[in-house]
Length: 158
Image (cartoon, rainbow, N blue to C red; front, side, top):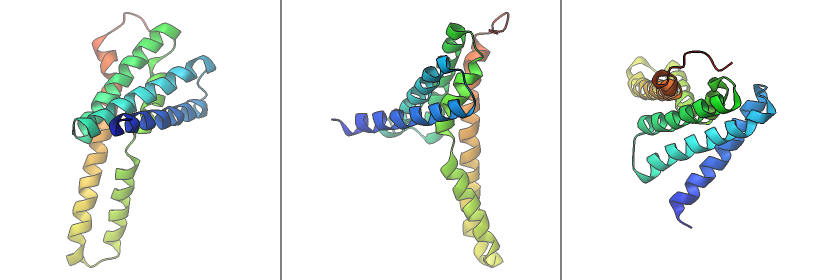
């Protein structure tokens, strides 16, 4: 089996599990669980495919994956007559940049234990990771709400 396809399927599987877990944690109705898992799996698969297959940057790949999640959430909201954020938020949670945020905090903690002259390198690392974290979170938010901005409905779904 192709290594890229195997990686994409593996990422999709574990993202579906993560999205489903958060959907249960958020008390999403049972009939929406599978759709939340599907949104998480497809969104993460798109992101992984762009990252590994097309060498796109993490921010661009995340924006594309979150946009796909947003469209899936919009479709599911219309189909199941539920708010789209149920599907969008649960589907996007597996793409939250926890590693970059954690590396930011570690670098900030390193600054407290070194002399002012040696603090430049950890400060640069913290700034780079913080900026990357913020851009990824912004891409997630923009992607999730994009269909709502494109397809304005005259009245709410619920």
